Image 1: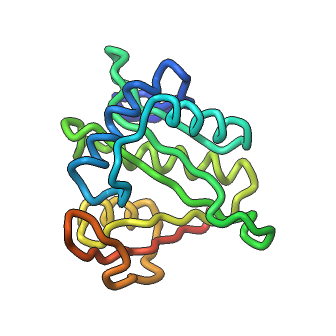
Image 2: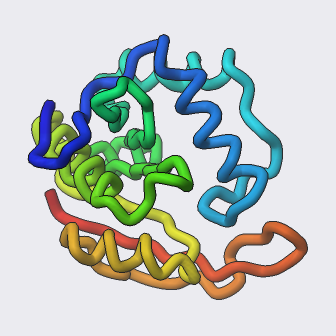
Image 3: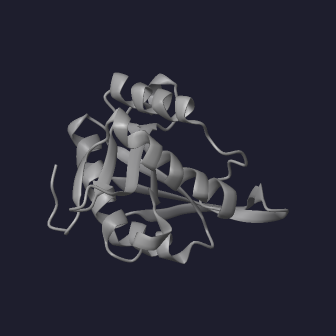
Length: 169
C-alpha cells in the first residue's frame, strides 16, 4: 500500500512494534490523544498487532525512506455485538516531530480503504475535542462530528470534551 506522499504506508510487522510503542507511550504520558494513563509494554503491543492481524483489521505504519517508523494507524470493531459488525473505530498516532506533513491524513485514507475492502460500512473516530488539528484532518477525510460528550474524559486532573466523528466508507 503506497501513497503519493514521500512516506510509504505499509502493513505493520512485529519488528515495527518497538517504534510504534515509543510513539504511543509518548502520547500516553504527555497528551490527551489517548485517555490511557499507564505506558503500554512491548508484550501488550505485540498482542494488539496479533489481534488486529487475526481478525483481518488494518494495522499500518508510515515509514520514511530511511526506514524510520514515524506514525501508525489501526482499526477494530467499534462494539462487539452483531449489529455493530459493519462499524469500526480507528486510532492514529504520529511521532511528535513528524506532524503537519500529511502523514496522518494519508494513514487515515489508506486505513479507510482497507476497512471498506474488508466490508465495513462506517468508521468512528473518538477525538479529544480540543485537538483542533485532528478535528480538521478528520473533516478533510470526510468525517462529520456526530456528537460531543461534554467532560466525557478525564486526564491530567481535568475534564475533557470528547468528539465522536464518523465517516461512511
